[in-house]
Length: 455
Image 1 (cartoon, rainbow, N blue to C red):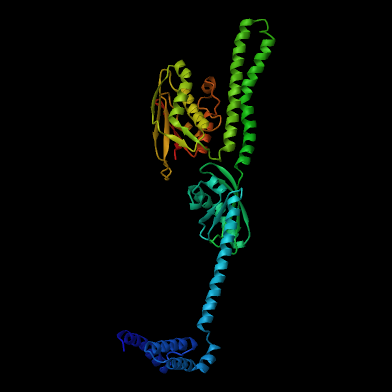
Image 2: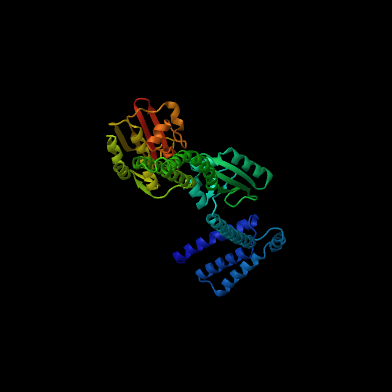
């Protein structure tokens, strides 16, 4: 017997011996599968030893005989216990069904995501815990790009007591609820919110759908109409009465007095110019209010714009012998910003400093980087314009940005002011998600701070 054949015999004999012992102890019930394996092992050993084919056939017959051991009990138990093949087939069918269901759910998820993304109105999808799971592009434009991560604007919306009550009612009653909201930050908005409960919830846990309809523009138009009638009728009455009076004078007593005609025509020109400025400011304020809830796009290089406005107003400064000191950080760029509106802010504040500063005084303009003071640490730029005029009493400061509010109405009109400059400034700064602050000390001057985001 060759060593290699001995080794093959030893290796093959051990599993056969173990199989026999397990059968005797009834630990294993031999079926056709195991019996076939045993027969093949016996035949292989017989051939390896060089035995005749007859002996090999005997080994195969022995395997077949072993296969019949305990066959009857196995068949009886087969009706009560599924075979491994049956279990494997069942598992395969279950896996195939789960895969098909998963594919169907994925198709449905893509379909509802496509619908949500293409809705023109802002839509938020919330979980049971009121966390934002999804926000469509319109919602991100309204509440900021971080709306899906529940940024500050989205958090302020969801904390609104009227909306919170509407969500509770929708979940409790099982039907949609509509709520009318006034959102004061970051800019005043009038929003209609429709809360729709989802039962059953979506695959991603979506439990509440909130449809937002921004009615700020419509509300601003209505306010503008009412304010324009009230304010325009009040502010235009005085110059219009002056014009009519001078016209009557020119037709009557001054008809043959060239000197009086020239004097009255000069006054009429001033009153007409005042009416033009007033109408321009009213229209400008109306336009800004109507688009205030829509964030601007673009960039505004602040140092360059500030220098251009100082240069444009230099004739007014020379007339009153006012000098300007500039300290500007050149690299600061406001984003997202409307450059024309930023220029209007700087012009309005500079004009106020010129008109209300002292003759021969100095205006200081500084521009430097500064983070937001609202707890978000947003990067920004702080523009400060200070004069050394008589200053403003403290009780006037909270009302300076109201329409047509004047500390000294007669002086303001004499200087050509309309009383709308700071109101326009405030609305532009709010549209840019910035901050406006006014400091003043009587006898020392006034300083106006404008903070604008740069990133």
